Length: 115
Image 1 (cartoon, rainbow, N blue to C red):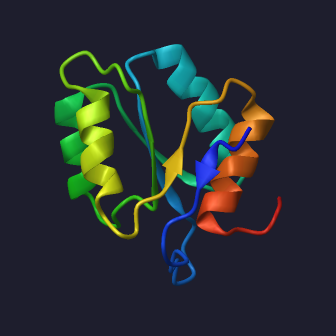
Image 2 (cartoon, helix red, strand yellow):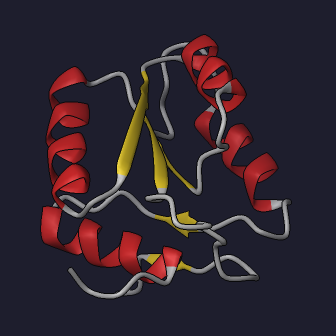
Protein backbone atom coordinates (compact mmCIF):
# COMPACT_ATOMS: atom_id res chain seq x y z
CA UNK A 1 0.00 0.00 0.00
CA UNK A 2 1.37 3.40 -0.96
CA UNK A 3 1.16 5.94 1.86
CA UNK A 4 3.04 8.89 0.38
CA UNK A 5 2.89 11.22 -2.60
CA UNK A 6 5.75 13.58 -3.36
CA UNK A 7 5.28 17.25 -4.02
CA UNK A 8 5.59 18.42 -7.62
CA UNK A 9 9.12 19.73 -7.05
CA UNK A 10 11.95 18.71 -4.72
CA UNK A 11 12.07 20.49 -1.38
CA UNK A 12 14.77 23.20 -1.29
CA UNK A 13 16.31 22.96 2.18
CA UNK A 14 19.17 25.44 1.65
CA UNK A 15 21.30 23.57 4.18
CA UNK A 16 18.65 23.53 6.92
CA UNK A 17 16.96 20.44 8.33
CA UNK A 18 13.43 19.86 7.00
CA UNK A 19 10.60 21.15 9.14
CA UNK A 20 7.56 18.94 9.73
CA UNK A 21 4.34 20.24 11.27
CA UNK A 22 2.46 17.55 13.20
CA UNK A 23 -1.21 18.42 13.73
CA UNK A 24 -3.00 16.12 16.16
CA UNK A 25 -4.93 16.51 19.40
CA UNK A 26 -3.46 13.30 20.86
CA UNK A 27 -0.49 14.49 22.93
CA UNK A 28 0.94 10.98 23.30
CA UNK A 29 0.86 10.40 19.56
CA UNK A 30 2.52 13.76 18.91
CA UNK A 31 5.26 12.86 21.39
CA UNK A 32 5.86 9.52 19.65
CA UNK A 33 5.94 11.06 16.17
CA UNK A 34 8.16 13.94 17.38
CA UNK A 35 10.67 11.47 18.87
CA UNK A 36 10.93 9.41 15.68
CA UNK A 37 11.15 12.41 13.37
CA UNK A 38 13.82 14.09 15.49
CA UNK A 39 15.83 10.87 15.39
CA UNK A 40 15.63 11.23 11.58
CA UNK A 41 17.20 14.70 11.88
CA UNK A 42 14.01 16.64 11.23
CA UNK A 43 12.78 19.78 12.95
CA UNK A 44 9.30 19.20 14.39
CA UNK A 45 6.58 21.73 15.16
CA UNK A 46 3.38 20.70 16.88
CA UNK A 47 -0.22 21.87 16.83
CA UNK A 48 -3.18 20.42 18.70
CA UNK A 49 -5.89 22.58 17.13
CA UNK A 50 -6.67 25.01 14.31
CA UNK A 51 -5.33 28.11 16.10
CA UNK A 52 -2.02 26.42 16.91
CA UNK A 53 -1.76 25.18 13.32
CA UNK A 54 -2.24 28.70 11.93
CA UNK A 55 0.35 30.05 14.39
CA UNK A 56 2.82 27.32 13.36
CA UNK A 57 2.36 28.25 9.69
CA UNK A 58 3.29 31.83 10.57
CA UNK A 59 6.69 30.86 11.95
CA UNK A 60 9.57 30.89 9.48
CA UNK A 61 10.55 28.75 7.74
CA UNK A 62 7.25 27.36 6.48
CA UNK A 63 6.88 23.62 7.10
CA UNK A 64 8.20 21.38 4.37
CA UNK A 65 5.66 18.70 5.29
CA UNK A 66 2.43 18.54 7.30
CA UNK A 67 1.20 15.44 9.11
CA UNK A 68 -2.47 16.25 9.60
CA UNK A 69 -5.04 14.52 11.78
CA UNK A 70 -8.31 14.41 9.82
CA UNK A 71 -10.33 14.86 13.03
CA UNK A 72 -8.92 17.93 14.81
CA UNK A 73 -11.19 19.14 17.62
CA UNK A 74 -12.11 22.50 16.07
CA UNK A 75 -11.85 22.09 12.29
CA UNK A 76 -12.42 19.66 9.46
CA UNK A 77 -9.15 17.94 8.66
CA UNK A 78 -10.52 16.90 5.28
CA UNK A 79 -11.29 20.54 4.40
CA UNK A 80 -7.78 21.52 5.43
CA UNK A 81 -6.33 18.62 3.43
CA UNK A 82 -8.25 19.66 0.30
CA UNK A 83 -6.83 23.19 0.59
CA UNK A 84 -3.30 21.91 1.15
CA UNK A 85 -3.54 19.51 -1.81
CA UNK A 86 -4.58 22.35 -4.15
CA UNK A 87 -1.11 23.82 -3.74
CA UNK A 88 1.24 22.56 -6.49
CA UNK A 89 4.04 21.84 -4.01
CA UNK A 90 1.82 19.96 -1.57
CA UNK A 91 2.86 16.53 -0.38
CA UNK A 92 0.61 13.90 1.14
CA UNK A 93 1.20 11.17 3.70
CA UNK A 94 -1.56 9.04 5.17
CA UNK A 95 -1.33 8.39 8.88
CA UNK A 96 0.52 5.09 9.37
CA UNK A 97 0.80 3.42 12.72
CA UNK A 98 4.28 1.93 12.29
CA UNK A 99 6.99 4.53 13.11
CA UNK A 100 9.49 3.06 10.63
CA UNK A 101 6.90 3.30 7.89
CA UNK A 102 6.28 6.95 8.79
CA UNK A 103 10.01 7.73 8.72
CA UNK A 104 10.36 6.10 5.28
CA UNK A 105 7.36 8.02 3.95
CA UNK A 106 8.70 11.35 5.24
CA UNK A 107 12.11 10.69 3.65
CA UNK A 108 10.42 9.72 0.39
CA UNK A 109 8.17 12.78 0.26
CA UNK A 110 11.00 15.17 1.13
CA UNK A 111 13.40 13.27 -1.17
CA UNK A 112 15.90 12.73 1.65
CA UNK A 113 18.52 10.02 1.70
CA UNK A 114 17.78 7.09 4.01
CA UNK A 115 18.99 7.69 7.56
